[in-house]
Length: 301
Image 1 (tube, helix red, strand yellow):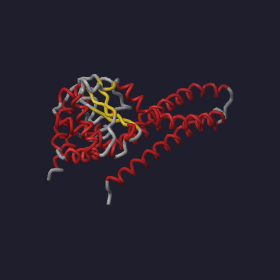
Image 2: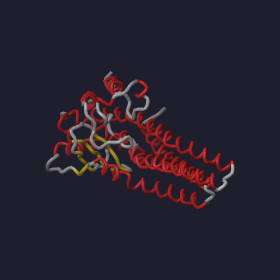
Image 3: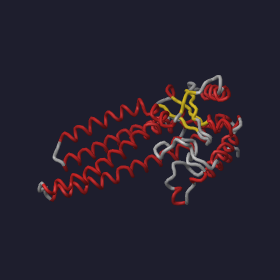
Image 4: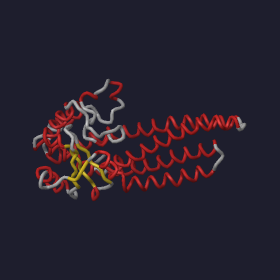
């Protein structure tokens, strides 16, 4: 029978799978590139680069995310209520108190980042603090603390950097291959080189798609678990349900958000106007809010 602890172990395994997948994808790109251009040095560089990026993303992904999100440390003097909520719920959950950051943004939203429970950050927008009442804020913070307790913040954090770099490298390889192909043809390259060029282009096109699918699959599942865990922490699922309604109904997007960081937020950060069709819903980073609210209300029964 699945328990919270088996889910935590599963999240740790997913993190290692992600690191391994990144190694394979980048080394694979380097291998194809080295065959096309008959240069083993390219493969060696790909191996060194992929190992370096894994280490870099583990230690610095959270700092990068906070920087690009425009989040700054919250001061206890000016944000006393959120400090009290985070501290009280952290004690209840048996977790170290995470650092608290605030984004100057009217759109209500929040996210958690970090590599483990001892190095975690909860970030909220100024709009969230303005729009939600205390019980709703508690629901949101409990949700974010649950991500920390469920040990899924590392995979959600590093995926921002790793997926971004895979897309960047694949695009670079695609462009370089197209320019290099013409030069190879003039140099009398054989049919095998042409075949490898085609394989390289296909690889470059498919790699970002594969990692994006993995990103979406991981994100959608973890939200339901964090909702349930957060509701158990506050023992008031209506608070989080009400907060999700207000957040999802806000028309505007979070100002500093991208497709790479969207999965981190508690709810779709592109705003109510960013809602899509049924087909688009399959590719959204978050489950439909209606489903999440229904699951929370069902916890009461």
